[in-house]
Amino acid sequence: MRTAEDPRPEIADRTARLLAWAAAAMAPAGVAADDIAARLAASSEGGKAFRGRLLLAAFDGCSGSDREAALGLAAALELFQTAALLHDDVLDGSDTRRGRPAAHKVFEAQHREAGWHGDPAAYGRSGAILAGDVALVAAQRGASVAARRVGDRVADLFDEMAALVTAGQHLDMRVAVSPVDALAGLDDDIRTIMRAKTASYTAEFPLALGAAAAGASATTVAALRDAGLPLGAAFQLRDDVLGLTGAPERTGKPVGDDLREGKRTLLVWHAVTHGDDAQRAVVLAVLGRADAGDEEIRRAIDAIREAGAIDAVEEQIGRHAAEARAALSAALPDPAPVLGLVDAAVDRSA
Image 1 (spheres, rainbow, N blue to C red):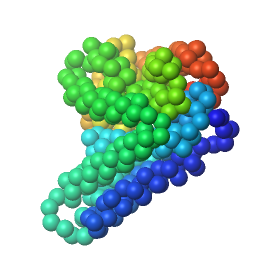
Image 2 (cartoon, one colour):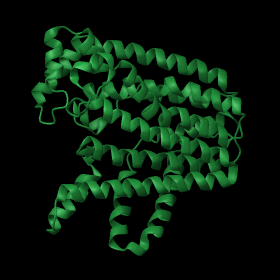
Image 3 (cartoon, rainbow, N blue to C red):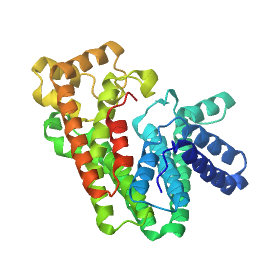
């Protein structure tokens, strides 16, 4: 049953219900439970709910009837995203998220202000990891409750997604520490990261989960998984471009953080393989250097642009988006709800 209303308030409500369940489950732990609950509430705010909206659009496109189950799955997806971001910020050493201090920095500040024993930074990282774990538990709870209503297929898909994203994150870490002189040969690994870590839970599985919740055939679910791969790749490539060219007040992250973190993106790969010696040198001089200054980062971004990397990636975004639109139109009886979100994935400033 299709609805024209913005589903974000409903997704936020179901997310809050899952967080309330988690808070009640943790309550015997006292103040520690309060700490984690507060971080989860803050960390789950401010997102675009793209994945949950995409799931609901697929559900509507397949004429689903049990909207409550679909909303529960959408909330579960958003909490999975919260868990991933909490863990990502620790793994990447990112100090901000959505324009605010990352959870590990909040826990660190709590330790420092209280004058507790030990290392505040280590305490902060541990707290954020545990908060992410609870977010993942709450997400799995949402998926299992939905499965009681619409069948085990949605739980199986959710579990497969969680395992794949985790392995994709590990591959991202491996590639980020690969020797710089090996970067030119990493294009396949970079694309595998996009497929496993991002496309999977950004588009492939949200589409599949929405269709499965609607009772769609296995053929339709498989076709939507295939359609989600180019859409998820376009989404990630747009993120990569915004990481270099976006406004921090819109993206919530400092410009050039991916460079400081040593991320091997297709933008960096293109600059290294297609740029001249001077451009390569400027980019490699900041790659993986957390202390790189703003002016160094600006020069590296200019070099990436001058090497043609941004234009090349923009072309890929357009090609992936067109492929996704065609696949979605072929897979869905009513593709209109989903097609409207393709533009939201690729034509955005945050």
